[in-house]
Amino acid sequence: MKLDEVVAVITGGASGIGEAVSKYLASLGAKIVIGDIVQESIEKAVKDIETAGGSAAGLKTDVTKDAEVAALMDFAISKFGAINVVVPCAGIIRDGVMINTDRETGKVKRVMETDQFRSVVEVNLIGSFITLREAARRMVDNKWTGVLFTISSINKLGQVGQMNYASTKAAVAIWPKILVGEFQMKGIKGIRVMSIAPGYVGTPMVKGMNQDALADILKDVHIGRLIEPEEIAHAISMIIENEAFDGTCLEITAGLTYGSKSIAK
Ligand SMILES: NC(=O)c1ccc[n+]([C@@H]2O[C@H](COP(=O)([O-])OP(=O)(O)OC[C@H]3O[C@@H](n4cnc5c(N)ncnc54)[C@H](O)[C@@H]3O)[C@@H](O)[C@H]2O)c1
Image (cartoon, rainbow, N blue to C red; front, side, top):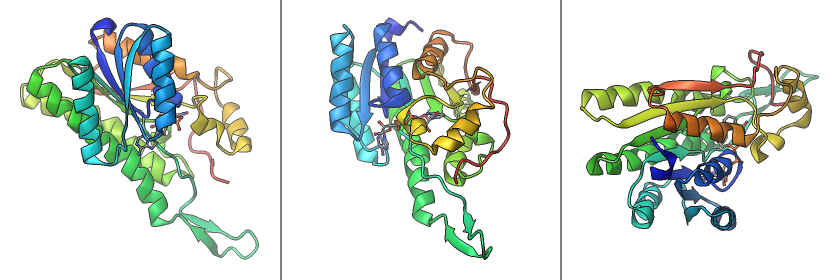
């Protein structure tokens, strides 16, 4: 698929990986529609793209709300006439262990609250589901071809301190298999589904982590640094262009070598 023929809807597109994907794809000729909850950041990202000579539009969207996501998809169609690529980058972390004990007494002093778990599921998992569904129903009805992405994480392997987050990232990593199977069953051709699972990327989400924990993690990264958001954007552009990528999850880890380590102190 040629990038200058693509209309891409990117949620969470006003910061971090989503912003980098928006700008990178725009620089290659794609038309970009950004959905995010932060209006000022949307406006800035759209302006940056337009200043650089690209085409973009944005709409304030909470991905947990069906009607807002549907409106985002209709907005994309009204602006640019189609939807071809969907990258649901809207995501949050609310780290912590399920049972936290007092060092001296060994008794439970804090737990992961239900809302701490639920809020992450709402945005990362249900938000991604609504986003893909609202895009796919329009793509199928209009016979638009393209790629649906999910944004997993290397933490899908079972990251200590992220029972909530890692659960959502494990779940979205298997969606390509399910959706490609369903599309195959229903004779829907031309819409591929791919997940990417990045390692540690230098975005506000990661830079805001516990700094000791981050330094500890970097000791186990083979290339010795955080991945640049633009490197993830490049991988996404490659997947869009190369039809052989379909129905699986691509890990982009920078050579991360550890198993489960504590990131919640
Ligand atoms: N940074 C990493 O190392 C890393 C690694 C693997 C996966 N990821 C995933 O990549 C995605 C983007 O992460 P990032 O590091 O760029 O984060 P980020 O915090 O920089 O950006 C996330 C964006 O999502 C938006 N957002 C949050 N809740 C929303 C909602 N309800 N509706 C719409 N938008 C909402 C935020 O406003 C923000 O613009 C996330 O799904 C994250 O889990 C990140």
